[in-house]
Image (tube, helix red, strand yellow):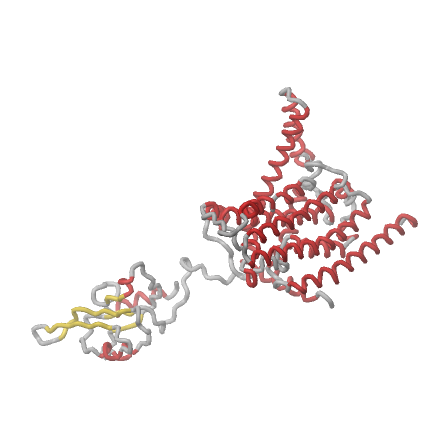
Length: 145
Length: 348
């Protein structure tokens, strides 16, 4: 019938008008983040053996690792920085790590006010350098959010 | 209930007697009353526009499965306030080669026909600023002036998009004026009067939407086009014309166009209520409240249409107006004429 499409369209929009809204109210409601999510990086600096595998694995060369040697001739970290500006988030560094001390976190709010803050200081920033065991607990808690 | 029903009429009468009691002359009292009516109409218009901007965005959101604006104030209720403050503080830009006088005059003039038209709208029993005996005729005559400010804005902006938008607005509004007038003519034929109060009075038993369903449909379609609202928003048509006539307007000048758009929406809804939906007639509740409810329903319907249909192409719009709506409205007048004649001769 002539004009039946008009009525059909109006009926559809009226149905949508009363149906449940699907928008996520972001700052209050958080999306579910899967455990395989590649967000920010996080380093267990006590477990790190400074083998440089992650630096070599990085295709963009964004990882800077500096280390020193202690009295037992054992290497320890002095600086670990990931320039996240040019990071591909490919995960090759995480895969390369023989001690599984470099990990992706579910942290996705990576916007910063200053350009320098984009660089992830995994050694100096306590938030990013917590032992992975404690961090894992935190992400479990975040899961519901 | 009669106290509530006549609330505003009583207030007006009280003001009038007070003014006369103060020893003012008849002319001054009448003048004061005119200013009072104007203030009332402007108040209703501006409040309605402010509220409707939020309502429109809420409805748009709900239809698109979003909650709409919900950040400023509870339930987003202060969104319009924030918008208004933003618009007030915007830089007022006039393009270098624009026709300055016409450019500045257009947004002011665009409001004038709407305000004038509100003078004959019966908001409730006895709540009509001037009950002229050619009410609906005056209304049509005045509202057809609304095309000129659009052309002024389009021409003076010195912008091809504005000019195209202005020309489209005029073409569309002139074309759709014809079926709109014809659709209202059916009602006028039944009532036998052009007076707004008489038209409402004639609907005390049966609403004209039942007697004139085709005319009502034609009116709704033509009124949407008159308001330049989607699906007939081709004068604005942002995907083709940037923003049509509004392209070069900023800040409060643009806000005036926006205000006029919503005032027009209220106006066409009020006319639809008066002409087809029985005006202020309704049980239990006071008359002006019934008018408010019916007008709100009409406004909701117009918004619902806007967020349902895509924009019509220019030539399709003209085709639909002249080749479909005009013949249909003429046929409606013809059939109404036969009906009225039969009614009078046979006397059903």
